[in-house]
View 1: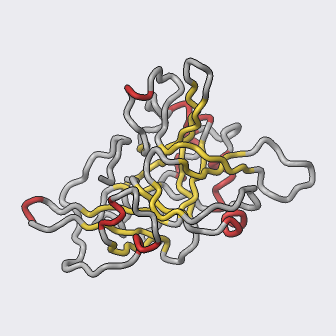
View 2 (view 1 turned 45 degrees about the horizontal axis):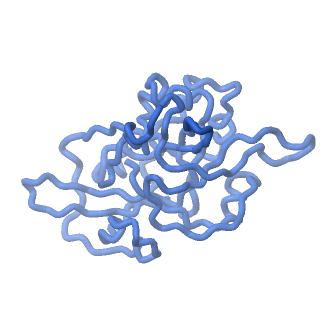
View 3 (view 1 turned 90 degrees about the vertical axis):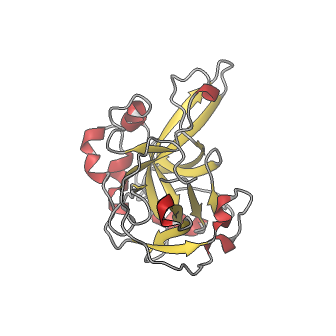
Length: 254
């Protein structure tokens, strides 16, 4: 978790949610997949004196973090997720946790419930969205990778945490959600060290999200329409998972 998400909120809504961050108009995206460009919010470089807006910027990065010390990304795994419990000390994420924490706006995310083979049940996709609607901010990390020829690629990953009781029947992990009142502290890498923001990397309250069963159309990157979020009828209600599955930063959605 998380392997696919969506961002369908308007630019105006995002500007309001992120306290006046500057960004251009963009189309709704219903099926954002790894290696694609994603919109992220980072700390700015200082606004003019007297401004009452937050100092933030919106940029595009490739979803799939590549640490700066990697020589050839083709020989390195695609890190779309980072475990919040270990990111502070893990070599792949340590520098980004200290210097390049970001916010990743989303309207929700997709996840699969995968029953045991013995049950005979089929996997079921879910569209997981805020119960009250609107946009949320995933906690994320950013790293700029430079090639031998001097070209640079900005890359990013989503921080995950243990699933709350509202999501655990589907998957044992979920994105870390940063609330608006904590945006400034999370983005402040100048004065807030990783250990000082560790309290923000916890599961969101149990009733924050609702899970809507959807078709397996989201399984294909080519499917990009709003019909991906159309509810479907499921035969059996969700049950609590029997085992926890590891989340090593790799693709977990498929």
